[in-house]
Image 1 (cartoon, rainbow, N blue to C red):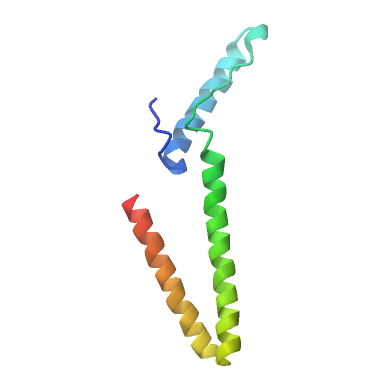
Image 2 (cartoon, rainbow, N blue to C red):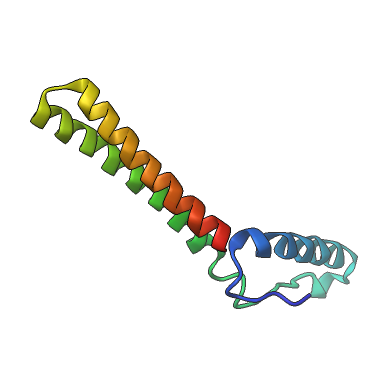
Length: 104
């Protein structure tokens, strides 16, 4: 198995799962004093951080859009104008996210 540490979590996770299954099977068949097999790789160390960064980015976007809606609503006093503005911002966010996703 050859995993690049810079690959995204979605690419590394199948390799990690396969290796964990191998370690579990090997530990089960090992003699009593050798049942402490562990795996170590620089590729795995960043995976929890990647997961949390995605969750925090989504949470930040949702909070920012909610506050922007409130601000636009309070400043214009028109819910239709606020909804259209937030819809436009949401389309920009979705298009930028899609661009990043498609470019890898």
